Image (cartoon, rainbow, N blue to C red):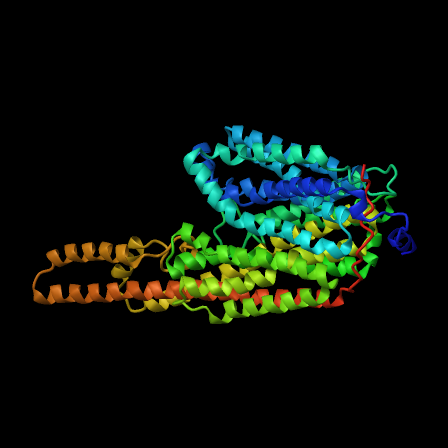
Length: 582
């Protein structure tokens, strides 16, 4: 603690940022960092749209398809603390240049890939570079601006995350349809080249003052990889009963339990190593700062609901509201705009008021209200407009979570450890997102499977066995169980047409008026059952979606408790991270 206090003590020799960095240096640095962050954020969403085309072109097996995303996610999360430490040792410019170079190399190799294995490995290379972009870009703000002014600029970086979730799918679809899926990766090259040009032209080194020599804790990095990689693989590939993720394994299966066990060993080794290392990758002494551990605990908890709150909504829009897959994705646009507005406005307010905790608490209460609206007022008859308005509330509550917690954690640590602190916040946010999707995904799938089986069985009760078999043949999976459709809408019209054809054939074979009357009665019952099954499916998807948002309320409550423990340290107008200007 004494060391931390000494490091945090004001330096009277530190010149204000406005004197050490010119306006052009700040503008070029921010533009380059924003472009770099946009590259990394977009690649998390743009590839998802091109995924089916890539799968068809390269003949990717269903069990290998998730690795297009998993390889990127695992590599990125694993490297965030490593790049954070390197940015403190080498400076932000060096890390951003290295990260963009690695990312562009991976992008070019992905675009040139002609096999599944090559593409998956190159996606991992992209992930290695993206980690530097995430942590380096967010640390730049702390070097350029004093704590009081950081909020409004961190809000801009947070807005990039939100915009990428809208631009990514639209750009991915357009590029894939017009130029081919290879250009989803090649398009990164000119954008990355522009970011490098801006960085080389005017960006200062931004190496924290007071850092002399030092080295990377390689054994600690290896132990962290041993702990994080198996954990992320288990969370990404694990599934509960009723979940139909290609290549997945049940939570209680030997592969998943083995990955969790290996992760526990790796994390144990990492903690042991960091407590003894001369220059640890993640300094354990930082966790003595309440602002550091409480802030990161809140970030992890919010991350658990950040991504999960929108992951399952498109399934509701497709199966209940009746939208196409494309239009269901566009429904998230207002939510994203709410996130962007929350990012920017909260950052501006913090810069003006010099206080952040009240805004954090207010945003979380607002978010809990949005989740409550989604968790208790959705119905099978909800319209697109109704859901859109409700999701705007969620977006406004989520928005402040990105910039404000980063500002709070950066403000609490010594200037020489800004990179480590920023990378820790990014790391815990990404880890929380992965855990949240796994946890809420299990709740969603379990609720959906249970409700679907019970409601469809009730809807078809009393139906003659042969007619029930015919209905299930006409609509595979519509009667619940393991075949229950989760990604495509059940359409009663085509199912009824198929049933009518079968009954017409049976009617022609019937002998006598009574036999034909029996066929007519069976047909009427079967057609009404189709409507009942359609309603049962809508009710099941609605209840599953509501279950996700109800659990999200409890998770957000946990984030609120951590936030209440967060001390509010003064945001100074002077004294930046004291990075080297020239």
